[in-house]
Length: 285
Image (cartoon, rainbow, N blue to C red; front, side):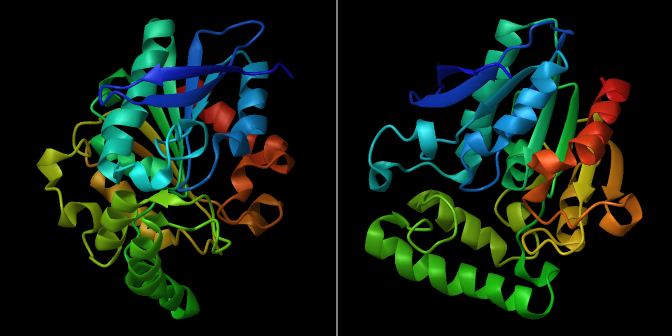
């Protein structure tokens, strides 16, 4: 295991994105960018990043503006939104990776919201393949039973009640995940109440959904309280020109434990899910 290098990428909007670079001992001419889930610090993905670095990939992780190492001022002073996370932050890391290794094949691995904000990333033409893990619509009716109720309360009560009080959404105080910028959660909750989710605010032709036409591996798992199969299907269907490999991973069929929303990036799945991902990337980039 090699220690990652910390670097700060200046974005078009003028703020800095904190990234970690996992350099391989023997590069194979391929780079991976890991785009995190909502409110999840980049360090969560370090074991996954180290593993792929050991295989010869240059791997980049990063925090969105307002999160972790990309929070350079008080959260209540940060006015970024989800569109900016894709159009500015995620795109800046793609641009940086291509600048540093212009001849590498570039793969983006997204977790949850990281796949949603691909729709605003105008540097997607530089990406050779995408793997999305539990990336989904947040529309509350994609869930059933108590999970549907929880999401309804999240969009309609927790975010609108607590955000004005704190000047940001205090998710960490509530025991959820890292706290989030106010404009980001305002936009997020507005989408989550509507069937068309992102497309309730932005027309399809104003996004990058229809632009990307290269390979995508789109993954979901059962018993994922944050990404139902229906919700993942919806997002997959928006990439109308991509070469999609859609897989719903059933643990019982694979002989592995329950995965859940966060399990994919745990080291226990190195011989199964990580190996599957490695093989797919090798065959599609």
